Amino acid sequence: MSRQSTPQSVRVRIAPSPTGPIHMGNVRAGLFNYLFAKQQGGVFMLRIEDTDKERSKPEWEKDIFENMQWLGLLWDEGPDPAHHGASFGQYGPYRQSERTELYKKYLLKLLAEGKAYYCFCASDELEAQRSNQMSLGEAPRYLGTCRQLAKDQQEKKFKEGKPAVIRFIVEPKVVVFDDLIRGKVSFDMSLAGDIVIAKNLETPLYNFTVVIDDYEMKITHVIRGEDHIPNTPKQILLQQALGFPGAQFGHLPLLLGTDRTKLSKRHGDHSVTRYRKEGYLPEAVLNFLALLGWNPGGEKEIFTLQELVEDFSLKRIQKGGAVFNVQRLDWINGYYIRQMPIEELTRRCIPFLINAGLIDPWPDVKGEEIWYMAEKRPFPEGILKEEDIQKVISLYKDTIQPYQDRLKKLSELPEMIDFFFVDNLDYPKELLLWKDADAATIAHALERAKEILSGIADDKWTREHLEEVLMPFAEQEKNRGYMLWPLRVALSGKKASAGPFEICSALGKEKTLRRIQFALEKF
RNA sequence: GGUCCUAUCGUCUAGCUUGGUCUAGGACAUCGGGUUUUCAUCCCGAAAACACGGGUUCAAAUCCCGUUGGGACCGCCA
Image (cartoon, rainbow, N blue to C red):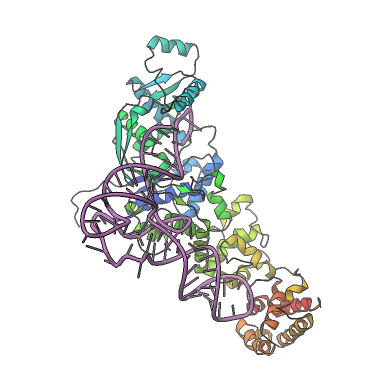
């Protein structure tokens, strides 16, 4: 196979800041970048934007790593992980706080070339100026007071110890770029003022570090949220001033809350960790997020990561924002749960079972760590064996769910199955009564069921056999519910559960009879 | 307020590039029915949208113009 030209290989990144837990918006941007990179045979990278020293925290950085790993969105280039003391994938992340010298070099260059200057204006004055401009109906911007400051005046202010920031001279020209998703976008930068690119030589700011890093990392496509559109012309001007080739830009539609404003804390907690702890599966989260703002054109709704990679296209990304609709996530999650092999599902339930106190955690794993271990460890040792749990979960996987909803999240599972493992069920006698049946009828039916069940040999105690034997007797009642309902309640203590034969077989003969006896004593 | 982005059922969307096959398709949610010992699964069905106004055209959800609505940004945060 021959090619006329070798296109420059695609290199993309996501650049979250570790100032809080990584949220669904970050992940969706990450997913789109990942899909684009993989489909193009390119490179997907992670860059930690931690230039804000006050707000950046190691715990949030860890939150980014853990969740990206959980979702299977591993980056494929970066520094030696050992250097970071991290064990995520093959590579560590790029981290801006480790590149101060690099930024300083370029800062000095801009300063030397007269493309940037020190500004001594006090921030409260600037703020007053901004609100004044706004009330006059003007675009709020810096007027360039310090741009023309003579050398000696500058020296004087430095000697006086006046705090200074570094501003970049924004050329008053029209900047046009061809957005990968929106087409031509243009800005008249004469309406903008000079922007602050660093607090000082050691503390560069966002718009500046992005430009340097994207250049140094040879990023070819900057795919990010729509909220960055206004930053783009500034960054393009910076690229030009530095003589950088510049990447292509593509701005993704925003993830919205139900009020159609940008998804934020106001809309509740949309951190990935929260969804994980509620029992959403990573494949469901990815599938859901991919279809928010993108669609391959057909009527297919369920996609594996690999299928998403194959079908992905930037051209098919929606331009308008998409409301984050939890009901749809629930539906997709439920679908994945029902499709999942029971062994796999049981394994994924481990942290939830531990959390609910049904099983003990691994002795050496504590606190939050349980959430990261299920995939790495065997089932924890304890009274309850993996097979026991598996057997019970399998009764629920395809069908049953307490109260009104089906099984949508793994966190709902423990409360559905706990009755299998406790000895004394707690439920009111009235729950045993089926429809209009009176106590005597129900007691009689239960007594009957007990008799029949006691006659069944241990080695015949299977779901199929139990049903075969018991059903004819149930049919003798006014309605088979008269026997089956109280039996099921006696065994589960719940108004909604798996069917009586399923429970009997999982419980075993001894426990089954004991529970029926317990119910009978209520009469 | 200024700048920029945007507009198909309540929500996510297909259709728009190459106008007719669109009395606008699918999915989630909602409602009704069937299956069923409960809840659910599953199956069937219903209701539900081209923001508005002009043009162009034999013909517009699809092309053009305008209006209106919605959103984002306007930090020595990212």
